[in-house]
Amino acid sequence: MGNHCVFCKIIQKEIPSHLVFEDEKVLAFYDIHPAAPTHVLIIPKEHIETIEDIPAGDHVISLLAERAILIARQLKLREGYRLVINNGDNGGQTVYHLHLHLLGGRFMAWPPG
Ligand code: 5GP
Ligand code: ZN
Image 1 (tube, rainbow, N blue to C red):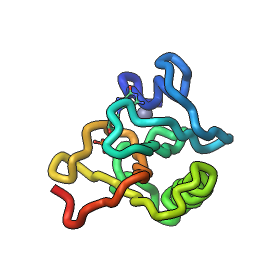
Image 2: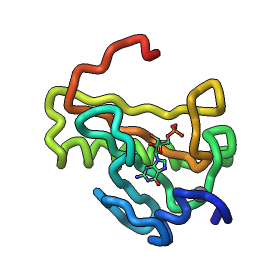
Image 3: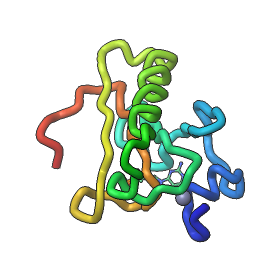
């Protein structure tokens, strides 16, 4: 667990969050500053800082993506949604605990800003 990591504190329930999904390996909760009508963060319970830190052969990304797809279905995002990983400072990453953004409920413009 990352000592000063806000997402590890959410996993430990030291910081409250609006949970959407939880199992042994994954937690999902609503983003505190939603960028879309539906904005959920899907994170591994293991503290991994960035996609660069995923061990070779580890399937954490497919695990997060599978959960995101199930959550999108449960939240009835039938008209589509966007899955995003911001990596590093230029990628817009602000929390250094791996997470997948699930964004939906409106049309997502491309390219992003
Ligand atoms: P990043 O910019 O690293 O890709 O995304 C981090 C996300 O975490 C941001 O969208 C931000 O709003 C969200 N966030 C940061 N702190 C908290 C928090 O304490 N609770 C929740 N629910 N979301 C947070
Ligand atoms: Zn962490």
